[in-house]
Image 1 (tube, rainbow, N blue to C red):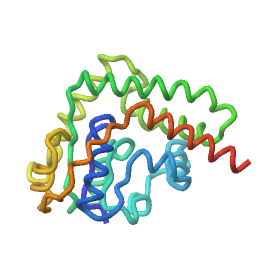
Image 2 (cartoon, rainbow, N blue to C red):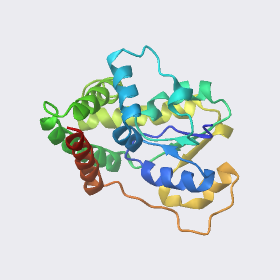
Image 3 (cartoon, rainbow, N blue to C red):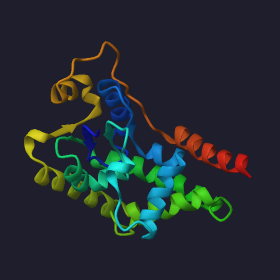
Image 4 (cartoon, rainbow, N blue to C red):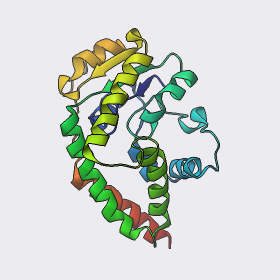
Length: 218
């Protein structure tokens, strides 16, 4: 059962939050990496983006997970709150310009991967759902810096206005365990907070894994 919904955009420390929540909640946390690496989840999002699924079955999609963070689920935090009303909401935050720089590097890498879309069906599915669900729906099709930062700031303001204060934690992963554990009423683990940087090298490995899995199935 989902106990925590991450409402923060990707590139705001969501990989660190994912790892931290898996320690605190003793269960898996849904993340964009889940979509990229697990066929059934990629298919579900691809079908959703294409209109084959008129609505996402959130309880089925997230069955077995204790939390969900990052794109694409952060976009649907309202729908997830309706499905999991007892879940707590964590809004990861980061300096807007730093967020944009990281997000822009990711988009440049993604654009390079698109060159393989014509021959790798899996990458076509990834491109379809990210274009529709994230780039078009969230950013209006524009990846201009000022436009993206405005959307980012507007999303933060919206979450603050929608989520009841007692249900919401605004969290910068540089703060470490204390605010997160206090919010979730969990003891501070006897391990360092997992500051994971999902930089370009790990992302390139993810794309290589995706390509290799496709080649091995041929």
